[in-house]
Image (cartoon, rainbow, N blue to C red):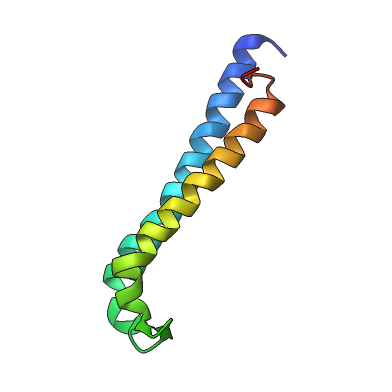
Length: 86
């Protein structure tokens, strides 16, 4: 495979990861924290209503987790395409 094709495949995988992870964050922060907040308020998590938890802490916690997931995915992708820092 040519180098230009490798870079295109690398960039396509990177964008795929970003779209998937941002979609997850959107679902957690916007859908669960705002749109479904009333429906989720009947469920309790750690003593708090789940809708309240998603709106106040859940989106931030999930965002930080997604950052670590992205770092792990990108490190694996860098190794796969042999563009890792040495």
